[in-house]
Image (cartoon, rainbow, N blue to C red; front, side, top):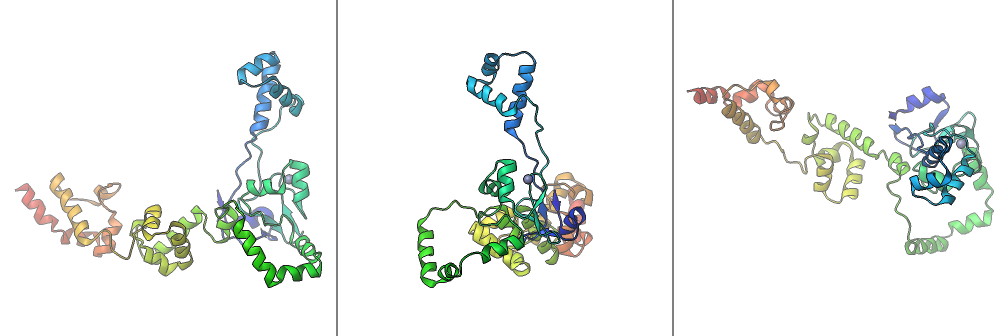
Length: 320
Ligand SMILES: [Zn+2]
């Protein structure tokens, strides 16, 4: 489910907001599906039903050690699965008043998450960031802690880091190193308002601003006109105007897709075929004919569209 900043304030209080720049809406974290715990629980149940290790092993087609390990891990106790998670995908919640950040797994608040996540949840910071769609460079700590940590870096090191030579060296090294492609990480998408949900919402805004009725009437040039950052992102991501148009069901250029002649011929075809006057209810949900709104937009009104198509005369001819 998507939440707004207002929902966050209602749920956690006014002092809580995203730690890094994020544009809403925010997508809630899915509950964890703890596959391991589920497997352990099943084994416990089989064992309680009087099955021997060997029988269990055969049911799952696994080695005896897997069963033994599972029982050791769970200690024979049934664990809760599908645990509730907290927070949102691709962001860290920050409480300004307490100067604490929220753990997405247990919902507790801490100055710094790294240690907690490792000790309580047996997860490295990297795994945590993978799980919650964060950049690896994202610091899992409050603003004060992060400030203190950066101040703790020796001055000469900061100078060295900023030297031109060093930056050039870094750029060269970076080009050589193969990095996992993480442009699609939720945090990055959120930051620019570009997760799929957000793109759809922004396109809706473009549609309304350009006074179009249907999404398929919105042109790429409309997107350029009313939301040029989004236009830039879509073009750089999909390469061609045509691909963007296909992906989001938009018009490729500034052309008019349902040209008037096309719209008129669709009305005439209907009348010819069905030998009756077309009504708005015939258009609703009819995949062959664009919506009444499209006709109203193009011809001023539905009535005028029918008039332009010369339907009365056509019907008389058909019936004669
Ligand atoms: Zn936790």
